[in-house]
Amino acid sequence: FFFKNEQKSFVNVSKEEMTRFNRFWDRHKASPLRGRDEIVRAFCPGIYGLHLVKLIMMMSLIGGVPRQDDSGTRVRGESHLLIVGDPGTAKSVLLKYCAALSPRGVLTTGIGTTSAGLTVAAAKDQTSGEWVLDAGALVLADGGLCCIDEFDGIREADRGAIHEAMEQQTLSVAKAGMVCTLDTRTTVFAAVNPKGGKFKMDGSSKLPLTLAMASPLMSRFDVILTLLDDRNEEWDRALSSFILNGAPPASLNPD
Image (tube, rainbow, N blue to C red):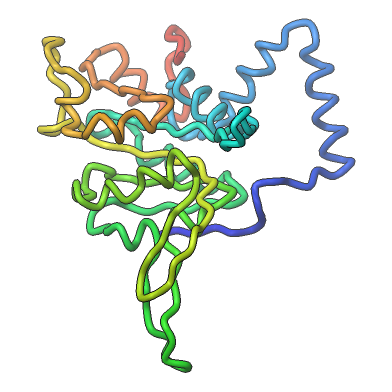
């Protein structure tokens, strides 16, 4: 379990950083997409390629702007992201990098995780003997990012506890005589393996069946990325070169 709580989701930008920011985009004024690609290449540089995946994760980290509709209901600005991939496709490394990059980040794993660990748990204070609420991962990540690796390791009964937290961005609690509502304004990144360990390469796999995940929970995710190990010899050779030499062959485009 990794918890980083330097500050809330806002970041104080110094004048020096603002000057470097403006200088960077002045240099790429004629071609802003090249500037974007340079930033994407600097995102999780230990992972080779995956340009589109890194771009989507960066945009999800930045997030949108929450608003209220005409009825007064809050519409979240956070984008939840689910990564579905074969083993060895860098899912865990990407989650760890995002959790470390976010000013307020929580990284946990689904194996052995219960609904109380994700939401809140009621416990007796050893000093006063009164019941208190201990915050779980989603509450601790309020205003930041919550990364859940091995999401398929969470029991089906415990997954239902996070439906409200992901969509309404609140958590209604009624435990040990305490009734309250907690904020869970967090972006959720989750990673899962396909059912059976790998995707079927014949194209017959349907995503809900492959994940064995209920549709209501899948609908909470705004973006679902699939990472396949298609056993491409050219790609494997380039990846091996990147790991051993620090650079891929010049003849192959990593994107």
